[in-house]
Length: 521
Ligand SMILES: *[C@@H]1O[C@H](CO)[C@@H](O)[C@H](O)[C@H]1NC(C)=O
Ligand SMILES: *[C@@H]1O[C@H](CO)[C@@H](O)[C@H](O)[C@H]1NC(C)=O
Ligand SMILES: *[C@@H]1O[C@H](CO)[C@@H](O)[C@H](O)[C@H]1NC(C)=O
Image (tube, rainbow, N blue to C red; front, side, top):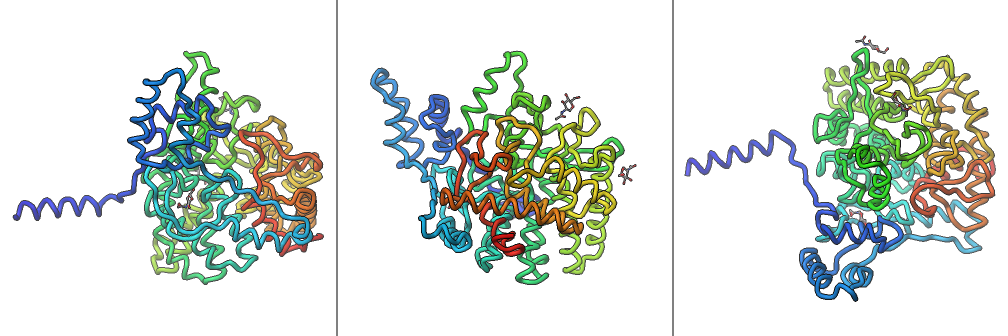
């Protein structure tokens, strides 16, 4: 009896000493050889389709039948029919406005919140979906789940539509994901658990505080701290922390896994096949996955030769935007501990934020080129490629005011195009490069310029972006995931999948900009 009690105590204590996070089995593990066959034989055009299928019966019996039927009828076996017999295919969310709705884009977006909203769900065996306890908004198209950094920009629009309960539900879902899995995954799918995405949770808490007051900084203190511990490698198996040459600390993106992405399985697998056998290293898969964690999947920003994805080396760069986000997280933790009276911790986090700000200005600011760059870890110098991420030190108020006019001049001369700001200056066929522009980057640039009183340029960018969004909407009835800002009469292209519409963050940023400048700025 006493022995049992002692055992119980040991078990309970081991539970309380280390956080216990849920672990999940991804579709490749659930379906084994069937998963690989479906992806590599291209049963579906998009690798994400099978990764998102829901089984009609127990996954184990499907696997057994697959082996059995294939062996019994090798000549007449159809993998395509087998999948259709045994799985429900996921829906694609398409929304095209009718001609009368095209008059009023704001009313259309407000209607879309209902179309893109999802109820809380419950887990299904054999499905990659991670159930969430509160309502949320999905981006649209092939993106049928909640996405981390998308959601912040969606929430900017929810705020303008006074959808405060939905905003709070979304923050609660993310807090739930942190406490359940130890971090916020890229999206709510098992195959997204090995990584996160640009950490905007602390900015979401800021948005909520505008409605509910500063008490929210105390409410979400544990979630904020857990998110920080994840990015600082205190939990999990990631390696996000990098010690800089002079001993200061900055961060990089890093996916814990080094296998092909499940939702892009054949793409990653076939890319690796192009390398000579001796040159292959699973680091290629990790760098592709890490590219997805950056949110910029994919971009020549991460390619060593600025050209070919096979040279991808995402983990070798210190991204300037990621470090701005962690600076904001440190300041938010300082505010949170101040709220709850823990002055020592509040002061510690203010100090960490200050150190990070100094390090960003030391390692990422280029005084000759008047722009902020990523930093190349092995080469110990800045990356040679200017990207629109270089504007984010204005968004996070990290840049000294004396840099402002210099940065604004580069932005205007090199990045400003007819339809808004272009992502990079290289036209590569990747979607996070020229000629494409993306809503989240327009917003961070415009807000950053407003922070530093560059209002004329902020207004000009807004005008061009709103005009492009509204014009495309009137022509097609759609709000797109991304836009071609260089040739405003062409559709945006590039990347691994066709252009998607819906679309969460475009809608959110557009409503925010219209509220600041009107629909015809
Ligand atoms: C998560 O993703 C799935 C994706 O299909 C979605 O259906 C579900 O409702 C989302 N939320 C939760 C948790 O499951
Ligand atoms: C980083 O440095 C390495 C090693 O010198 C170099 O080969 C690579 O091109 C650089 N990567 C980027 C993205 O600039
Ligand atoms: C490293 O550089 C940063 C940024 O300039 C500075 O704040 C810090 O004091 C330096 N650290 C050391 C150990 O010299």
